[in-house]
Amino acid sequence: MENPNIPPKVQQQIAQLQQMQQQMQTILQQKSQYEMTVREAKRAEEELKETKEDAEVFMSIGSVMVQQTKEYVEKSLADKIDTLELRIKSLEKQEKAIATRFEQLQQQVRSSLEGRMPEAA
Amino acid sequence: MASNENTPTPEEEFQALQMYLNEFNQQIELFSRQFQMIEQARMEMITSVETLKGLKGTTDAVSLLPVGGGAAILAKVIDADSVIVSIGADVSVKKTNDEAVSFMGERITEMEAQGKRLAETVQKLQAQAAEVSGRLEQLYRAGQGQPTGRS
Image 1: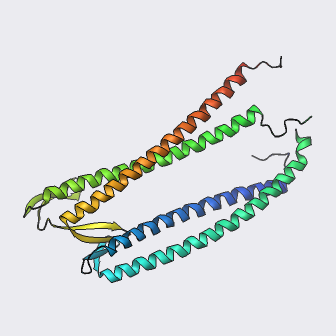
Image 2: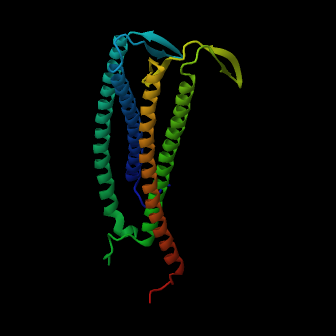
Image 3: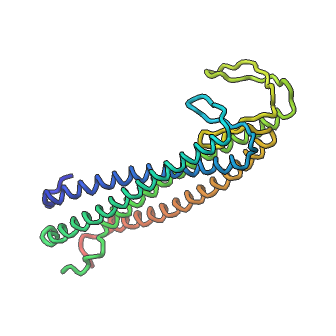
């Protein structure tokens, strides 16, 4: 895929851009997975609120279900939500940083290529 | 000299459209897969609701308990009015048969709505893909019928 008309430095920058795109995709995938898990946990939390105080609640630990108190399950769900929301925030920060860097690099590549275009045609 | 600097050449347009078409097709595949998954889960839940309704009120109902590999053992349902229902996030709650049926009924309705939304999205994407396809065909035909010089 190497183009002799493009200087090595720009080719390197293009490769960097592609790498960033992949990173961005991984981050977005992870983020959407966490968001889905948070939504599910929040739903379970809501559902749990509607059940009686003495309801029998179970939690899956591996392939077994263990009976727990409603209070314990509520707390562990809240903890899970907090942890995931923190991770989502951190991913959002990474996403922003990559997007900014991507735009800068893209601009650099564009100006480098535009400067060379007239002869290339 | 470069009056059409910003106008894409037919070849460039062709390439761009081809890229859009690929992206549309990928999205269609993704949403279709999601739709299938939801449909499968919905059908499974409908079957479970039917089973629970069928078991309601029975005592010591003898049923076949699948143990994998196509084998099943005879088992007695000792309490058809106690159902452990998963509410998501690895949490399950014990409910009465009626409560479980109503809870699952709500989920089925939600899945129906979700499925409908997904089907609509797929339809929209298919329409957009067809539009791009049409334009691609137009460009292709124009390219084929075009004489080498301009009259």
